[in-house]
Image (tube, rainbow, N blue to C red; front, side, top):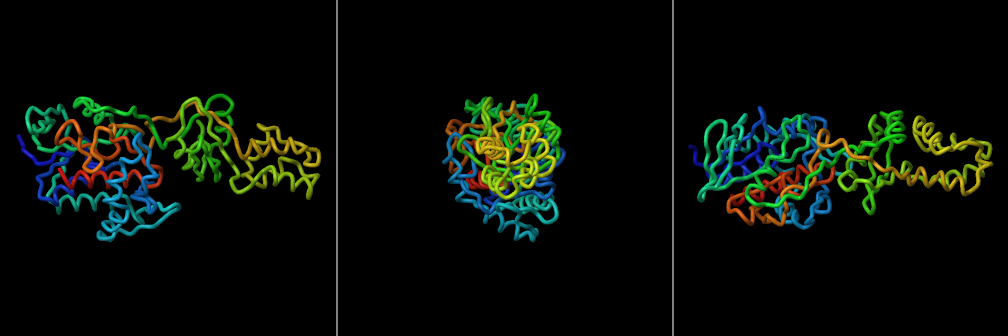
Length: 392
C-alpha cells in the first residue's frame, strides 16, 4: 500500500498541470494513466504542433450550464501565464489566425516541458496502470490498481471525456462522479463534423475536398472560418465551432459569400453584363466546382438580363443564407472534445473540489466546461489544473 498526499487519475494536460502545482507545494504526488505514453491528445493536437492556448481567451469562449463557473480559474492562471512557462522552456511558437498559438516544431515539446516540470516538482508519473476500484472508507481514498493498492488524501479526476475512443478515451470520470453522488450534464460530441442524408449528403460527397471561407450560424450564434465539404457532410473550423451549439432536428444557416451580398452583385452584373449567364456570375464568387454544383441545385441558369429581381433575390438568399438540417454528427470518433460532464453546481469554482465529497476534485474536460476551437480547451486544462493544484 502506497500512501500519497495527492493521486491524480489521468496523465493528460489538466492532470499533469495539477500534479506540477501540487508538487511545488511539497505534496507527495502520483499521476497514473492507463495509456502507454502520457498526453496523447497533446501529441496529436494542432496537426502535431499543439494549439496550446489562445491569446484572446476569455470566459465568453466557453460553453457550460453555468457560464460563470470558469471565470475564477481562467483569471488566476491566464494564457499569458502558460505562455511564460513555454518561453521559459525556450519552446519556439507562432500565432496563427484568431490568436491561436502553436509550437514551431512539435507538440512533443509541450509534453516534455510538462514532464520536466513534474520531475522538478518531485511528482511521479506511472503509466499502463488500470484502475480497478475507487472507494473512500475513511479520511483517505483507497484505489485498487493493476499495479497495486494506493491511498491518498486528495483524489483528482482528470480522465477527460469519451471523445476519440481509439486513443483510449472513455467515460470513466463520469462513472466515478456518479459513484460519489455527483450529477452529470449529459455528454455529447462537440467540435465535430456534421453529417447529412439524401440529396444534401450526395451534394457534399460530390464536392468533397472543396473548401471556402464561410459564415455559419445556428440561432443567435455565428462563426466565420473555413468550411470543408466531405463525403458525409460538412467540416472545417466554422462547422466544428457551430456543432457545439447545434441542436438535433434544427437547421444551420451557411453564408458561402460573407464578403458579398449576392443579390446586389447579381443585380449590378445584370446592368453591366446583361448577356452573362447567371451561373457564370456566381462562379466569380465561389470556387468553380461549388458554383457548378449549386447552380444545378438552386437552378441558377439563363441570362442575367432575363432574371427578375425576385429570382436574383432568391439566388442571393440561397447563397448567403443556405438552410441545411444535419441528421447528426460524426460522433466521438472524430470529436475534438466532449460537451457536458460533471455538473459545475457540484464543484467549487475556486478549487475544483466536490461540494459533496471532501478531497475529491474534477478538472479539465471531464467537467461541464467546453471551449471553442482554437486552444481554448487546453487553456481550461491548464487553468483548472492549476486551480486544483494550489489546494490539494
